[in-house]
Amino acid sequence: MANDSIRVRYAPSPTGHLHIGNARTALFNYLFARHYKGKFIIRIEDTDTKRNVADGEKSQLDNLRWLGLDWDEGPDKPGEYGPYRQSERFDIYKPYIQQLLDEGKAYKSYRTEDELEADREAQRARHEMPHYEYEYAGMSDDEIKAKMAEAEAKGLKPVIRFHVPEHQTYAWDDMVKGKVSFDSDTIGGDFVIVKADGIPTYNFAVVLDDHLMKISHVFRGDDHVANTPKQLMIYEAFGWNPPKFGHMSLIISKDTGKKLSKRDETVLQFIEQYRKLGYLPDALLNFIILLGWSPVGEDEIYSLKELVKMYDEKRLSKSPATFDKKKLEWINNQYVKSSDEDVVVDLALQQLIKAGNIPENPDAKTLEWARQLINLYKQQMSYMAQINDMASVFFKEPEEVSGEALDEISNDTAPVVLKEFSERIKKLPIFDKVQILATIKAIQKDTGIKGRKLWMPIRIAVTHEMHGPELPESIELVGRDKTLEHVAQTLAQLDKN
Image (cartoon, rainbow, N blue to C red):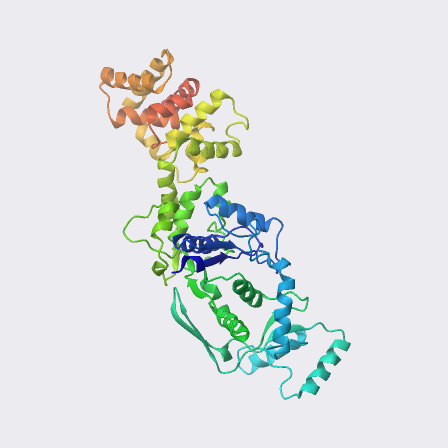
């Protein structure tokens, strides 16, 4: 490919936070551009003013940066093909709209919504697919002008519709799906390209923007397939060559088997949500690339630099991509394990503060304690917010031992171990993991109690859990006073039983 001609874009609407599916679109376009040493452009499609939200654009850009993506042109990086917000390009669109009107390829339509709905009801009654019916059918030019003048006199505001050519096939060689074609008679009739308020519609503006910005390839979601024939008609009307299209597979939920819906609250779908839970951006990006793209080989963990080098658009999948929460957690855990300690500590510390488990401005002693605590759970954490549940024993007074844990210590040797442990740690000159481990080993030597019967009573009494990180380190972080208190409570409970 000619590198200087590769120009791709990610064109979000500022109607909300960055969605997983949109992040995937941005990532696939980014990797394509960087792999072929082309240009990656951000364009904001903000013409749907009713749905735009405050800071929607900022959220999109901030979260893309957080994921590690950069771009060559955009609203914050002006280039020669700007402006990069559609709302700032209306003057650019006007002469092209007029050109289509002058050439008879578009026209003003005055049908009201009530009239259009009446048409649709009649079509449904005839078992027809609802579609727009040409309102000037059978009229001469003079009759059409007269009808338009009559509508204007009533104060009706027209939309502008594009004349859809009849009985034509619109086909393209999709970079993901292969050969795709549509019959022009199946798309629902002449479609609106300019709304009554004068704002161009998506299918019109996107064509002008992509052409004028010299976009060479368009990678987007499968839900845009039905838009493509309409856009090809616009390209044809102006005599322009369209870009190459690639429509990426749907993302489906592993739990439901259905398309990932923004209304499905069982799956977190916005990048912002994962940021708040303490996911690592590199891990999330690694997971997203595997939604509909497969690398060569069996590895699944890659840096962004490696992905740029190995990216091959031919490996985009035609089959739906499965969103698997457990796989995301596994990938993030791999990154947590290998990440710099300071990065993990900083992110987990924010979670501890947010939960109120440590103060907002911790002193040096608390910070060091928190660092030890976080490192204790580093190997187990899939994301940083888990630290609060995993380490709850350090922040909340445990309830009485019960269930399987109580059964485990309901024997003759458990009280012996716990009494010995309590008496000995009272006398330790330094209460740290080294001295605690030495104490437990000394109890084994002196009592002959070993293995599970030695370690489990201590773990259960101190933490009220049967499993967890290294026991001596855990006991050190619980602290001498709390450890003695927990052991005493457990012994009292065993005495009652």
